[in-house]
Image (cartoon, rainbow, N blue to C red; front, side, top):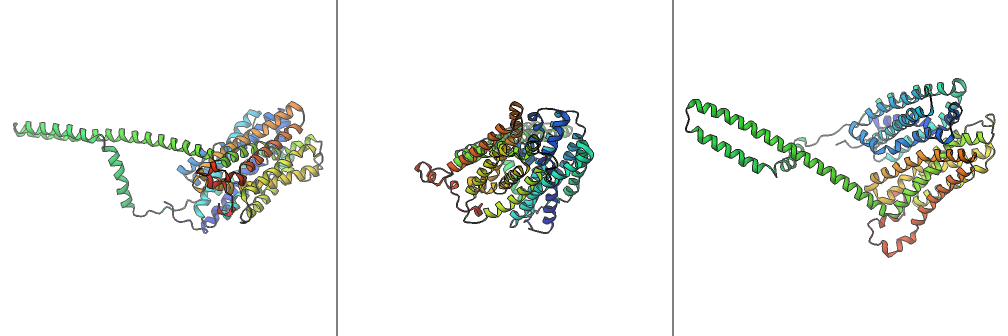
Length: 500
């Protein structure tokens, strides 16, 4: 059992280290659009095939979120952070030697992506352990690390490529990412407090003893008792030498008795282990089914999938969109990914502050950001100048900062007690969207020779997800008599965002 979160002290060192960890690990994957343009020229592959590299880096960590959580729970945040530093640094350095695009799928897509997933879980877990009253502030500071990394790495990678080429750029940012090791070392776990340990130990032994011997020990004891009685009767009729041998027989019986008990204990323990695992899996699927009976959660699941399929590619591909529109590098004084990243950081802060106002409905605010993002994506085919693309990049960046209010919406939908379960499901499908979004857009370009149809598809996907969420969450559904007995009916009401 961990001690009470101190809400300060070494916790601020944890926040600082976590900020720089997210800065160092997410900077390159979120600004991968700069590298994407170079990989297209180096490997001369299709846009859809090349887009898999960045999409895997963004999606693998989300897809593996249950495994990442298990690693942090069993090993702790510090060892996982240190291991992930080697994983990300090694992945980036190996990527500089990639002979083909398939090698990048593993080195950049899987190694860097999985390392980012591990580090996200580790930083959030460590921060939550040290903060309770100021947890929102602490997590807000930590989460901005990835956004700050996006716009800094966008310019940094572009400059490094101009001086050292794509291979030299990857080597340098790979070496830079090894600073994660130093930050990981600072993530000291919160000390554990042992209270009434002797009483707890005695209490915990009772169920185990009962489970082990309750079913089997009666028959075993009867058999052993009969053997002991038999040897005792024989001992009364023998000499002292026979009694000595009888004493030896009794010792052997004790050994056999212990062996039988151990065998019964192991068998019963294994049986109980299997039963507990089966029950846990059944409970998991039962809770999952109940979650999807909630119409708002089902719509939120569809929304997050469509939003990541359609909303993630613009930030990933805007650099290539500008290149396809024959916009010269001289005109692009500031990389579009830089603009998107800095506006995303601003969006996270402003939208998070707005969600704390009692008179603002967090669900409707979230839907508004979805609709605005969809409209901005639909405008991409009409943008033929750097200024219009920069405006679209800023708009998309600001409204995709809605990740800061997404936990509010999830909590209001399913309740705090089911938040972890529901959030894991939603993040998994967000990873699916991140993995498939950019390749789908790239395939559209390969088929048609233009990005127009691709971004129409993306914009419509985002709008469908947002409007479907709004439709099922309208207040009129709460007045239907069929929902009065629904166990999730309370979660349909979005009165105050701050109650999350």
